Image 1 (cartoon, rainbow, N blue to C red):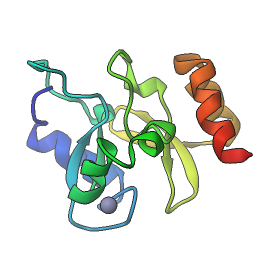
Image 2 (image 1 turned 135 degrees about the vertical axis):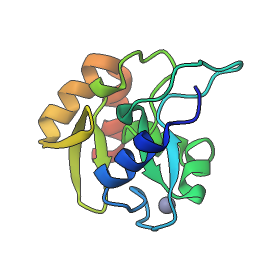
Image 3 (image 1 turned 180 degrees about the horizontal axis):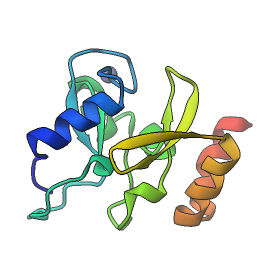
Length: 133
Ligand SMILES: [Zn+2]
């Protein structure tokens, strides 16, 4: 996927409160929620494709934080065609949101689980049972 436009980048940073969603840092990078495939897509990412993360957490989504990134919707599987359907967890606010256009809308845990299941099915439940138990 191509780099986001300046406007999309700024929209995502504003939506996420100008802080790294994971650790709260003010030094932001644009996290591509959908993996950038080999050869890449020429499509410009939309705000729902992005998340405000610092460089360390952004790199972590491809490394040691990958399981958490999938569980929290910071990253979505490459085959997910509509990342709006995967909710995002904001740990510093302890709440789930769904991304809609340039906004984020707080949702309940139950709605977040329903949304995640509708995309990932059993896999989503497995990720979250592992946390709840
Ligand atoms: Zn961070």
